Length: 280
Length: 263
Image (cartoon, rainbow over all chains, first blue to last red; front, side, top):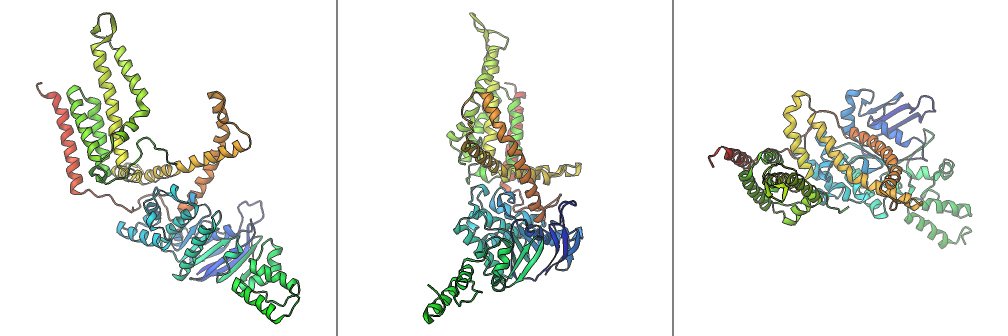
């Protein structure tokens, strides 16, 4: 479990804190989406999860290890893998397989073990046939998958991804999201920081951040039901939820906690079939 | 992106490709010493050796020529300098500057440089950059005890190599962005063009620092620490590698011994 307890963090002591009393618990195996407008502290928060940042007040524990203890950092970073926004700035190796081998090499594993882990990690993200390629020759989505494989080769219990689908085309986005779903299936916690509301309807849990605080924390259905709260901090809701919201505004009797196109379809056909409400 | 760099790696499975990179690096170093010492007879033997190495490596003559071509002017000037400015016995009495000694020096020195370039080209064309870095790292490891951080040097070199294309692409992007806003990099004299390039250099440097910052964070996140680490491929000498290294060393000692023969 990752536990953040009342953490306060400021980059500059003269300025207002970026995180103010943020508390959060993430059990193993959960798919958590963290959303919030730009500058709300999402990235700062997740950097605390693998001890890249240490809170000035409060404390963060990873499976009981405090990030305040520098001696625990290596183990914490092995358990919590971090995939940054720009894959170009985190791929170190001259070839794909060497990059994936970087983390296990830092752990001091034997070459045979490294080879095995590199194979499994690349297989998981579907990039095994690119093993010998030069990172520069890959597309944005492929680079993102290599960055994820690099983290998986450390056999983490938690994987944190900071906007893993930004700048990707729809096909690349799809591939990355599928891989994240696979990770959850394998029992790895996925902590997915994003702007895109449509990506997180499948999450177990949505954490909404605003101004360095945690505004809402719950199942997607419950969070999106309060569309006005989201809108107040500059966030939108998934398109189908938005549609239901507008239908209700027109006086239609549809549910508001709709998350998928199928559910929306059922709601609307029920509406038309019974002929109730003021639908035009 | 597909521009061919000088001595760029040509993937393959020839006997030379498969040798341990350390054998190749050591051979090239030793060969360079022999080349710089070589007289007429030695140079013929070494030339034969280089031709044999090239044909074993499966590299086409065209590839080798392509590696030499950018240096053609340098070779020509080198030859002319020695040819015209060496004192000695004139070949033609009418042209006292042109001497037998000059011809000899010119040919020898030019051959030496061509031979050095060819041997280095065979090394870099048959060895993947990562193997070159890995091989050098392992050769330098014994110096760790004298404070030489061979692991860190290897990481530095491989990151530098990894980011060359990334930074080139960034320059291209910035150039396009500026051209789109009316900048003109194509016209004007050399000095003016260099001045215009300054508008690319500053954002490039700033961007590189930002990148380095993020990279450092990402490396830390992946458990990087100074000092020893392990690798995907731990280099290991095979019997073939030992045999090849022994053969090269024996051959080069033989070449050096020629000068002591009563010829």
